[in-house]
Each structure stands twice: as structure tokens, then as C-alpha cells.
Image 1 (cartoon, rainbow, N blue to C red):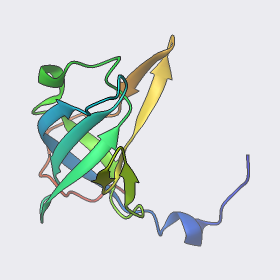
Image 2 (image 1 turned 45 degrees about the vertical axis):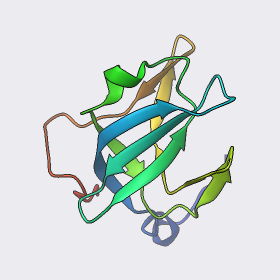
Image 3 (image 1 turned 90 degrees about the vertical axis):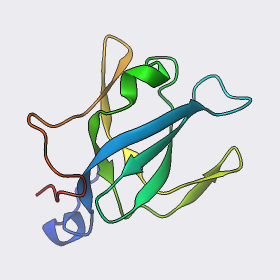
Image 4 (image 1 turned 120 degrees about the vertical axis):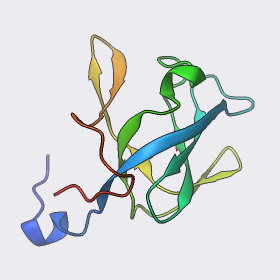
Length: 108
């Protein structure tokens, strides 16, 4: 793994976001189209967690998002950010906060 400098790390804008809605991406078994509230706006994020989460299990969750990731078109949908997750026993685990905070709260 390559190290990055602290200055490079400071460029990453990590925020808390609240999941507002979730739907499966057509023609994909793994992708979900997730609408999140990041405090100042709502964004669409495409995430490959459909095999691990049902849509109704995600709505209302507070999650950690990389806010300033360059947008990318995935299955014809522009994704504006990335949800952070880890894996446990081959299953995706979405990272969440310990306590409820306002959408858009800066993670430092």
C-alpha cells in the first residue's frame, strides 16, 4: 500500500449523510441507487451493496460518505460520492456513526 501525505489526506471531504431513499439499479444484481442528504444538498450515490442490504434496511441510516469524489457514471447513472464500508466474513458492513448527528457534519 502506498502512503499518502497528511496534506493529501486533508483533501478528502468525509461527511455524515442520511439515506433518504434506495432503489435497485436496473440490470444489476449488486448496485443500489442511494439518495442521501449531505446537509446542504441531496446527492445520488451508486453502491455495490445490494447483495448484502435490502432497500428498506438502509433508509434512515446515517452513513459516512466521501463527498468530494469525482462524479462517475455507473450503469447510466451519475454517482456523486462514495459510501464507506468494510467487510466481515465476506459481507459488506456500511460504516455509520455512534450517535445521530446532522447530515453534512464534517468528519475529522
